[in-house]
Image 1 (cartoon, rainbow, N blue to C red):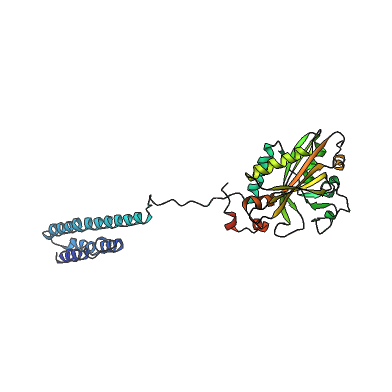
Image 2: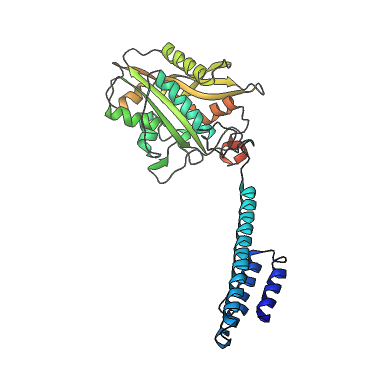
Length: 330
C-alpha cells in the first residue's frame, strides 16, 4: 500500500509540471505502461494476503480513474491548442487585397500583326501562308529581280546554297499563290523575313506583311485609299503620312510611305507599294493586257515602334521581361 501511496503522491506533483504532449505520454507510460511502476506492483498482488487484496485493488482503480482521465484530458487540451495555433497561422484575412498572378501577353510585334491582319481582312484581304526557306525563282526571278540586281548580293541576302535563301520578303508567297490561283484575287501574306542589316531601325530578322489585289482595271487611287484606310485603322488616330516616288523591280509605278515619329519628329519609312509590274504577271502566266493589280509591303516591327512609342527596334528581341510585360494580357 505504501508504494501505491507514493505513486499517487508523485503523479499528483508531476501533473502540474507537464507542459507538452511528449512529456505527458512519457509520464503516463512510466506508470501505466507494460513496464510502468503501477504495472509492476500489480504483478505482486498474488503474494498479498486475502484481506489486503481488495484494498490494494481499490487503490489501484482510484489511481487509474484519477490520473488516466487527467492524462487524456491534458493531451486533448494541448492538441486543441496546437490546432488553434496552426489554424491562426494558416488563416486568410479575407479583407486583404488579392494577389493577382502574372498573366502572359502577346509580344508587341505579334499584337501589331494581329491588329494589321484584322484591318486588312476588313478591307477584303484573305491570309495565305508560304515557306520561309525559298528558292531563287519565287524569291527573285518571278518578281522581276534578275541575277544582276544588287539585292541578290551576298551582303544583302542570307544564302543557304546557290538556289535557296532565307526569304527576303513575303512577296514570294504572292508568286506561289498566283501560280495556282486564277484572278481575281485579294490576298495577304505575313511572317518573318531576313536581310543582312542591323541598326536602330533595322534587324537581320524582321516581320513583314504584304497585300496583293489583282482584278480587271485596278487603279492607283484604289491602292492609295487602301493604304490610307489601313494605317488609320491601325493607329486609331491621325499620323502624318507622306508618299514618295520610289523604285521596286516588281511594281511600276512605285512609291514609299513615310510616317512621322511623334516623339522625335523623325520620318520613318514603313511600307512600299505600287502597281504590279507586267513582267510579274507574265512569270505567273497572267495576261498583263487583261488584268492589273497593286501590291504593298509593310514592316510590322516599324509600325509597332510607331504605335507603341519604341525608338529602338532591337528592344523587341532582347527578351527584357520588364519591356515585354508592358503589353496588354492576351
